[in-house]
Image 1 (cartoon, rainbow, N blue to C red):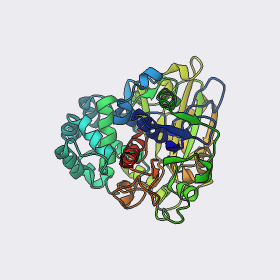
Image 2: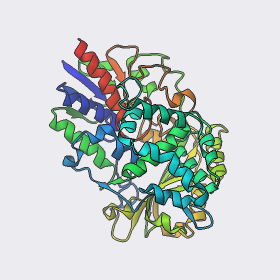
Image 3: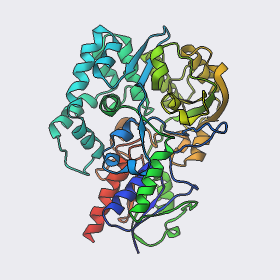
Image 4: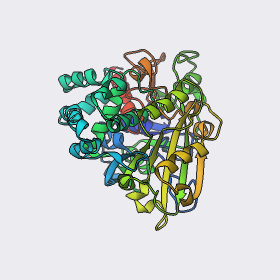
Length: 469
């Protein structure tokens, strides 16, 4: 009998399997697709030689992840590449705010009236970042805080809505960039703990940047899989699990799946019926014959570029998708241009680029025209650079990754109490009604992103149970 079986080979499932194997437990991992990866993959989606990331591409949370930093992933081929600027947010007048590695450079891009306010906001936490990120991403109840005072101060700053926090800024540039940071998790700007979301993304950039993985995001998954294999773990692909009886006998089962899929497989009935899915995404991967012709010079050297004219426009786009049930006329866009720092991603002189906007969950329309009109506002002539595009709305995203129910790439709404307590109102979110079954997907804390910490935290709960037997 195996000690543990893990279902789903996304970053969290792979991390959970590695953490258990590192501690001497026998582990087997089962994945429905023919390769590992989940939300961290790389594929030729458009033309030969253009290597796209179907989901995550820039990785501020991965490079800062306590779980990943404790593993020798570089030995297995994972290498981070850092663009000149982690992120830029251009404006219609050709200027830009930036999220740079330097706090001073970032603050200066906001203008003199907000530079001091920004430094006072982030610097106290940046000096204690390593302890803070470990405590923040390990909650709840998986480890005692190593720096409880800093964590409490962060909670006081982060629990209010981001619209409250941005009142300290007097000009629009700082408000807009921060609103864009919150929107990375598809959260309405006025939601609880949205200040914490924006702060984490900003601090991550200042601490270690927003890099891309050399060769593509698949390198993260492949490194985790190779490490697991070296530790003695077994990986089985092309193996779809429809019920628990499809799996070999084990002392524990760990699911990197959506809560609804777990309930169906394990026979939990309506246990997760109150779990809410968030808005969907509409994503386009592009093959370009040259770099994106951004008007703002800063955007040309940034790995990630946020697109929204001001905080009001960003807020309106999020409300349309999450509350009004319609696609926004001017969608807020997150874009990533990996080939500005990794020329291996495309043929010489060519580039890969992706952009996505928010749409209602399960939306079946086509956002291509609205998305590209937004890009043309900030990069005139963009359409002339397009060699090929691969579009994926909510149905295509859900078909590609069943965890993205209705196209929700955050694996559950990041709003209300579900921002902090997911997938249920519980202090033990990785446990389920069955004492030997656990959940470790992004539907559990600390939530969405390629960081493996949901898998790490769930693995702790598993090995504590196994050692009690």
